[in-house]
Image (cartoon, rainbow, N blue to C red):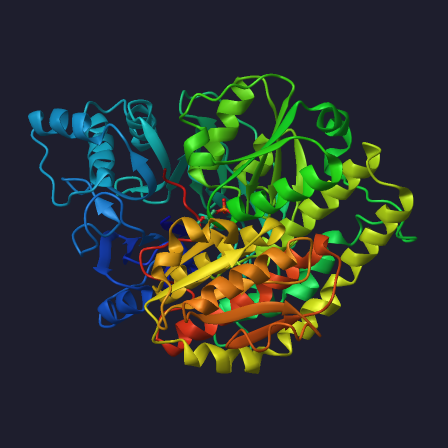
Length: 612
Ligand code: G6P
């Protein structure tokens, strides 16, 4: 949700800002803008993408070595030029970019208007920059930094901000509460961004800000303190991300690249967590809390979007194999519905970004209520990763495509490891079965690879359905969340209405939709539910629905019933969710491409949802 970039150093700032915004565009693409201070302040901004901004400034003087930039996902105020960031205060003393929401902006704006302030935009951000100017104009004893801290102390809500005070020319001030901010430490230069990806071409040394931190940065160094003016210490973390990870390479889209990365990612996620003799799973990040997990009255898994679908897979896996009660909740519901929690509950938050506002708020609430809170996160150094008591990182690498693919399969891989380990330690599984299922997981990357090799067949099938207006996805048991995730992929990137349903529920509603126009995707790999799902296929067929089935290789029973088949290799059911989602990811991808949709940056969506 909105990307922020900033730089102070010796180099020309414009290319750093533009390339940074391009990397951050996955966070929002409603408008883009930059501010450069070079003697005087220059602000350029416009509705649309970073490429529109480049056109917009092509004849302008964009020289300077200090600047900030922003790519927007609109919350307050429609996407237009006026509402685009950076926002300048009424008298031009401050310019600011913001990610987050100032919740009390209406009250603050009313007070500022009483004090003579006038506004150009409908944004909450313009209120904040004017509030800073208001404090600044109160007297000479108040410098830019103090004005910013005073303003932030009045703010309710979330922010990651970068601010330039035009009177204090060699300085950049950044602050965060609720929205992520990273500072890259170069030589005589500092980079700031919403995540590390725009910074790594220049430096790997990062400082991840904590909530309430304010950093005052000049070319010689930085000072970190809290909003309350208490000195704070910072650690420099070396990130291992490579430039290759943030480039598309030979692929047309990041989403396609990320789909094809899955064999490697799944292996990365279990590698080092399974002993070399394949006899034991080791989850180092859970070592200290494992007894709590084993004795938990229940495990509550929370997440949003795709991560919530992974959580559902986790529920089936942990309950089936480890026999520990599991509940799955949308973080956005859980945080507000005053759930009953005790210190015997273990909450596991799943989040690719580690920054999703609802998930973060939910874990804080759960912690305050005495639950043990763990995380399954992809981004090392992210807020959720830092605020949980233990957890497991997925090793999916940076995911840029807005529709999550490799992060999902990595999350399910971690949940499979966790379920197996819990089952073994809980004495619900023999060593023999345990080792046999570990081996099933080890075999997954090669099987995923073999599914990917059939991408041209999936592309061909997709071309048949590109004109559909609706689609229904059905699954049972472990494959029900796969149906939900398959439908979500199609919705997100092709704008087709798609609904995922537990196949047994079809007769209670969705069956009314079935006619000879409706594609019905049935996830029907061989497992304990197979005969039941075959009955559902018959029900759809009887109503002339077009059936696309994900089936186990060699299953010829369904040939006469279905219109199209995607085969996945024979496996134990424990790993079928990981295999079955692959053709559905590709199916959505090819449909979206053939409909001319922007696959990596679908309309209205953002990768990292740091507002509630
Ligand atoms: C957004 C993204 C989804 C993601 C969800 C949760 O909606 O577009 O791909 O699943 O947020 O994000 P998280 O980072 O917490 O997994």
